[in-house]
Length: 180
Image (cartoon, rainbow, N blue to C red):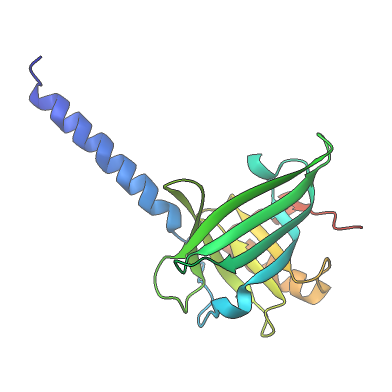
């Protein structure tokens, strides 16, 4: 079978689109800035999800937590857990995260599916590393995280204002039930 020149061009365009698509998954929403300096050692450990913009993989989940730890290869192990109230069972997802640029910037990319990464950007954190706001690569992904099952109203208000300024529709946030 002889390959025609236009087929090579189409294959090249498809490959370029795939590479662009995969690399663009680690971007920041327009106007957002990742925390800098960022200290991964202080960020590691258990976090409770306070609120999120809902998406397919977290539908119906309550009691959501994320635990971050270092792997031997210096990537970050991401262990997400939540209770699916519709299916009445616990779900867990294990992934890994890597820094996009420098290790002192809160720009990471996370993968739960092999070579496919998505943006994980810490754009707000308090001085004690107890409360954080994390966004994905676009306006569809946002999380408020806390070291405790609750978060002070002052930090929530600050985050919601910042998120709205970036273009997030905070009225669509799902407030995670962390009750015992």
